[in-house]
Length: 182
Image (cartoon, rainbow, N blue to C red; front, side, top):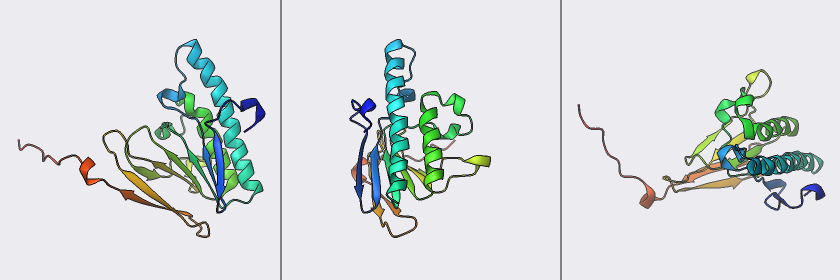
């Protein structure tokens, strides 16, 4: 961690098998960019640390010729607003840095997060010309009413590196109720 941001211990990084695993302190409720002075002050400082951390992670991955990068954070950064970043507000800088980093890195990038409480595996980042950044995969994990898991496999020598297997817990499945007939 950069000395200027040493208090942000939530931002951590590990390497294994040519893959860099990184946590980034990105939180829900608009990344805490709220309407009170204390929240804004907290957001501004933490956001600067997060952007520097994302940038340094991609730089490290490039320097080490990493096979892939994995990011973990809590928030759902409103991927569906891509192309309308001004509406994204507290997540705008995070998304911009993930886009630039994924494009520049050019190898698999896995972004794991929660907050919307349902399983989604897709490619939500849009690059120039609104084309999908296909080396960047988002894995939004179950949560809240859907308490299950996802097994993430990794083969650093496979060009796609990652595989995903949902692990459904039968005890946590809601009972199916057919719609009432009109």
